[in-house]
Amino acid sequence: TEELLRKSDKLSAVGQLAAGVAHEIRNPLTTIKGFLHLIKSGSCKVEYLDIALSEIERMESIINEFLMLSKPQAKNFKITDPRILIKNVITLLTTQAILKNVQILYEFDSNVPFVMCDENQLKQVFINLIQNAIEAMPDGGNILIHVKKPDTGNILIRVIDQGHGISEDRIHRLGEPFYSTKEKGTGLGLMISYKIVQEHNGTIEVQSKINEGTTVDVLLPSYREEAGGFDAQSQNR
Ligand code: ADP
Ligand code: MG
Image (cartoon, rainbow, N blue to C red; front, side):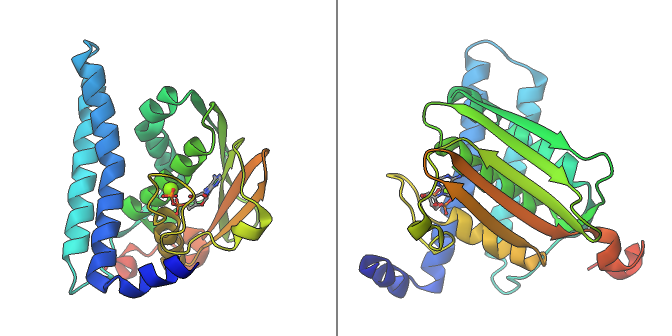
């Protein structure tokens, strides 16, 4: 804890930003690397190139976002189908999952409402959560992702893993900057995820059992109740 305090004390706003950028850029880089390896080994599919290209575009937009220091809250909110967003994220992480012997399964409710969100940012949240789930299962396993409508006004996106879990005395530390139990972890993924979800008026809740697994619930307001009807004009920023 002492070291943690010292760390966050010393880190200037710029330093934190730099660490954040490095962390966020590493995910798409890993994906691109994976696809380039596949292509090098002879299985060149247009789909791989498309995904690599869209990952490069994502890095570009992340960098641009961080460069807009004068407008740190600049967001690009759009009406989004959460199921399509989750499917895209699963596609991005498929190579990584296969390499780790992890299967990503999903179950979507048929009547899920839209969500008003900054797509790239919300994608980043689920990339972080699913990567944590993969990393919690060094011997492989299944990840199950639910997209549900638990009640009026909300959308629930649940990520369930069968990993090593988090002990009760550590669960409250999740989201703390630089809290990581991993050798190569940054401890920024959850902090960034909590912040993004908060900015979408949502919440993140974590339940976990040692050696059984972890369930992360992301609750977001659904679009209709939020906006009080379809009024694209007043929603444009
Ligand atoms: P990092 O992944 O770089 O360590 P995160 O902020 O993403 O940083 O996560 C912080 C810590 O929370 C991890 O180091 C790990 O100890 C714990 N954690 C997060 N998600 C899970 C999970 N699904 N299963 C087990 N532990 C987790
Ligand atoms: Mg992480």
